[in-house]
Length: 403
Image (cartoon, rainbow, N blue to C red; front, side, top):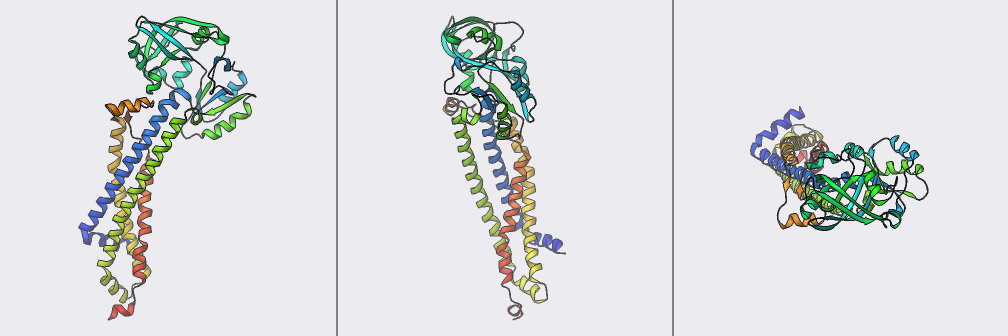
């Protein structure tokens, strides 16, 4: 009976109910969109470097990240491979040899980051082969190179051109060789795209005279896998002098940027829910005071206060639930649309983003956890705000109602 009575009471004042529900819908849509947008930005920033470059953590020699020298390279051992392959939650791992070199063409020279990779492993982990925008991925032929999109534009080179790399090899040996550009790659991080040259691991080892040696083993985790747990499980298998370095330590500026965006996201969401709370509270106040005479009469004829309080709470719950469901349904297509067609940042703002190594787009993150979370928060807020009506009803006196 309480449920049926509460539902009918909502539509006795149709305009008030619709205005309140509309305000809840708008606030939920805006909250979900902003939350999805900022979480999508965080994911896009992290994926632009973590997902294609650093991995969630790297196995390195101690001190390598502070002094990225080939003297801190090492020869991988089979026992470490076995330990990594047997760990749950790991998407994959790869061998890399990284150093710097001077890239030269007929057009000029430029300093570059040279990264030797295992082409087959990277296909399954980072999807480098799907990031080729012109030409082909690294094949069986030796002395092929992939060049970052930005670097290719700056050096005015394209697929089929020759590229000479000159640098210092392992133990001070001279490093120089000539490569054919097999493809242009776009990794999504302007900092990488403007500087990187990717070789097959064997070609990079030959170039630097670092035979069988690598500088790091980036490890990539599956979604929702704890980074701390994975590192803790691996550490007993690491020999002395080796560490598992998390990406947060390798990319401190990215960590700070994500933390700043998270703080901004929390502030925006809190402000939105303060506004929603006042909207719901205003409705509860109006609904309670407009019906005081009615409530006194109902109390006088024998209805218990607890049932009256339950009726008001149920009415508030129905309004919040209706607004939450409509907000859920309205926000999903909006968030999905902007995931498929991210907001593009143009002009000077785009250059600013690129200078920090961030692709100038704003994608949203479609996660049902976000939708559910905000809907449940609205329901909880509504029930808590119903305390006002409960307190008002508790002050009603049957004696006063009979006069």
